[in-house]
Amino acid sequence: MSRHSPFLMSDRQSVEAIEFRQAMRNLASGVSIVATGTALGRRGLTVSSITSLCMEPPCLLVGINASSETHNTILANGAFGVSLLSGNQQDLALRFAGRHGADGVHRFDTALWEQGILDVPVLQSAVCVLECVLHHHQVVGTHGIFIGRVIATRSAEGNPLINFRGELRTLPCG
Image 1: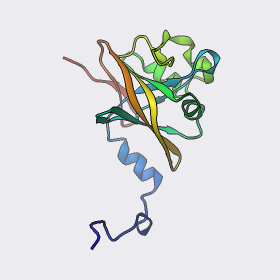
Image 2 (image 1 turned 60 degrees about the horizontal axis):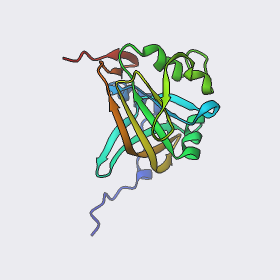
Image 3 (image 1 turned 90 degrees about the vertical axis):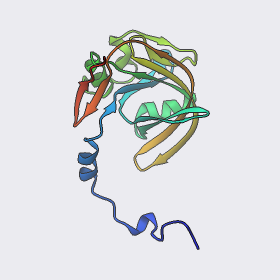
Image 4 (image 1 turned 90 degrees about the horizontal axis):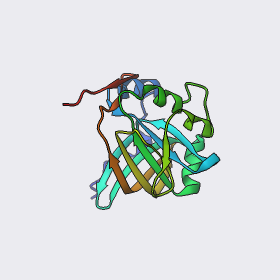
């Protein structure tokens, strides 16, 4: 006798995308920039779909639209940096989300970046930086799921930027 559900995933109809989006707006999540590449090949984007996955080995999971330049550049480079943004970095989050018309390497023009130990772009003023080597990649629907093994971290002071109900907000820290 199988311990699995007798229903296959295809036996049930999914909710509509708009209904799912509305439900997920109620999940507060941190806002980060995921970046990779060097010089004119740098690419990055704003994400709020990052979570820790396991401690042994230390890994995180990030979802990135498969049609983005950053998705394919991470696959080509095999490494990426995650810069967790602070509450005063809303403009940077919007810039890397494509709201200010900047794309490609030009998204990096308005802030101070450095190349981390994995030679990936990391934001100097981030609340936290995590540098990852690509451990696993899987495409599900419209997005690629990247599992990164964390090689280096750096933390600083600051209140985190979060996305809640479609708005960028900050959490006050004690």
